[in-house]
Length: 416
Image 1 (cartoon, rainbow, N blue to C red):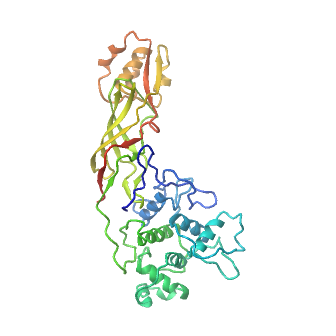
Image 2 (cartoon, rainbow, N blue to C red):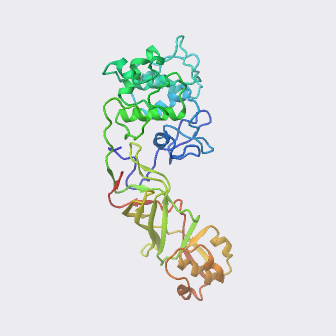
Image 3 (tube, rainbow, N blue to C red):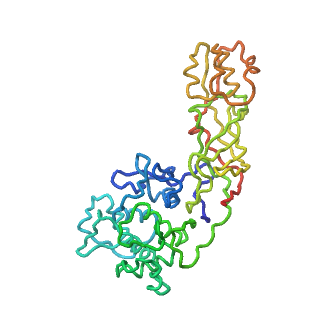
């Protein structure tokens, strides 16, 4: 969880490794963007929900275009090879081979070669790889233990006797699975005592295995799950807090309108929503998507613009923090003239009280006060400021692009 953060400082925006679902291999994430971490068919109480969320945040796995994850679907050897390449960075240990059933044009050819040369996967006799074969659970565990060079330190058979179905483990897999067990890579649902070694691995199960392998190699924080087989050395506890550094940029959105209009002189209260999980480089969520940033739009008179100034961060678990963060100064304007149709101005827009008063007076539309108006000064008291004006320039804010904010001072967030 700790170490380097997966955020960028200075002028660069924070980006979480994201999800782009491919048509041939929806487990794979070929580009980086904000990650999808919630899926329509993975509820929060699903046994593998946290494993799936963490790996999707890292860009190792992805959902489907319809928003689903399909956790119970099988994983092929080719898909697993591609996931390995996303999860682990490792130098080659052996020369590439030519698998006759993996042509150079095959979508996962490079991933399969990488998984082979780094020691994670091997082929079958006759230089076959069987890329479209569903991969069994024991093969996944053998792959992870082999690729990470894990050897069994205790008695192999005594370790395997933890499983009620230990006799079903293939001979070639016994030592690697014993090593994987010692390293707490094995996750068994619904009964932790049953390995089901020859059963085809599902997308959820593979996510759990890979995440635990990342934990075992110090690349991810431990997840508290009753389905992790824990008979080896205990996993170090999670640290209790993390410091988010100055310069981190928070991705936010305003959910009530597509446009915000304010005058150059007004202050308007505004609450924004964190658009995507803010995570460390280990994939641990520090600020969950859906958290609220409470602040206000303030005039920046020397620049003739408006700026969002954050005051308070409210996490989804209701923890509150004072936060020092601001957006860039927004100077784009929209001119409102006498005779302008207010429907085009206020449609899908939120207006500061001053902007609402200005639009009402200049256009003559007295009903403008019934539109989405941000709190602050009373509209009636502002009407007189605009009498006689034939036009007014308002600051026009695009919430999706203009309100991303940079943290101005380190602050600490509790992880309990």
